[in-house]
Image (cartoon, rainbow over all chains, first blue to last red; front, side):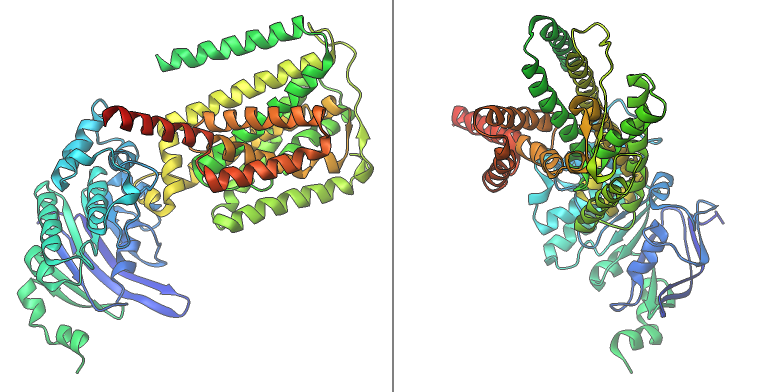
Length: 241
Length: 318
């Protein structure tokens, strides 16, 4: 079997005395679509912060493409091809939509993009999320759903090998969820491995090939969507005993 | 084409400045324009960090005074040629800027601003207690007799400051238009997101704070020879710190020419008022203009002009 693109080994993260993640192990294969779920406060965002480099873990290792990146800074990880969107959108507010995409192209994807036609490449991505005619609009005045789309578009502009989508759908309506899902499927087709954090089970079940469940910092299940929903530990974590 | 226009203007400004020294005899004009140019350098430098990168520096006077007092010390100890001392002064305040950049790792927003203010206060205390630098009483600096190819020393200082102003503006313009400038803007808008998009935020912040420090130090470096008497009250003057913030705010912080415009407008108003009304009025003028612009035109003169252009375009289309 091929080497996993991401391999997390015995990762433990503490905030003072609080153990946010407790010896978590996980692997992600190339082009795989992984769902990461768990109740509030179970450590999902902490885990992807440790993967993307926003936080560094003191114990355990994170390997990406066979390289140990545990101590690597976030911007270097972005150069290697880890990209993420944020739960609370963080657009570059003084820039237009397309400029938001040019930042990761000029930085994270510096080695991977053709610098002669950056704007056209950015337009391709904007077309994918439906912003083709709105490239020069200011990004600070977008609606919530559009900001989520921008988050994904910007993450994609970094030409990632691994994309982490952190609750891109929280608070959106049913049809908006479908829109975002479609975008994520389109990204997956561009041979990007995706980790999707989501509370909306309908979306997670449809999207994921495999699901990992966290509860109180521990991994309690790892398997196909059907296996995971019938797992008694998962049921207990969500519904109590 | 735009690049050509800029460099042509640079040459025109320098040539005009030189012609000015040859054609005008009244020393007052050189004193007045020197002060405006000094403000311009401070404003452009402040804006590299404050406008492009989003870190507010309240301690501009500290960098300025570090440049000035480095000159005092070097002049007293070694009496080196002016350009050499100026370069050393710029380097030292650049290093202070670098140090301030590392502070930005831990402090953001208003806390960073307070830290810069504290640094200026620490430096002022050091100078106040340094006998060698003249302490609180101040010290005299004697202008050299020879003034190179100029008629007097003030013309030389004016031309030197004009050169620094042009270099500062060119660097600021390069920073704002380049890939580096895009990275700085990303840091300003959202540092966490910038880092995750591959922007080496610390490195860019250090470049930004160091560049700011260098130019503020350069702006201060000629000050002792300009006034010939330096004391902490004048070198760490509140007006210097306030002007460095007010000029970019009035001109517009988003683009490289914002602080240039702001410095020219505010500087000329201040100098005119000094002669025609009273020199005590300066701080009041800054205050009133700053309040006026912040409340009515938060994007400065550049913003006002852009709004006007957009409105006219809208009318033409409609």
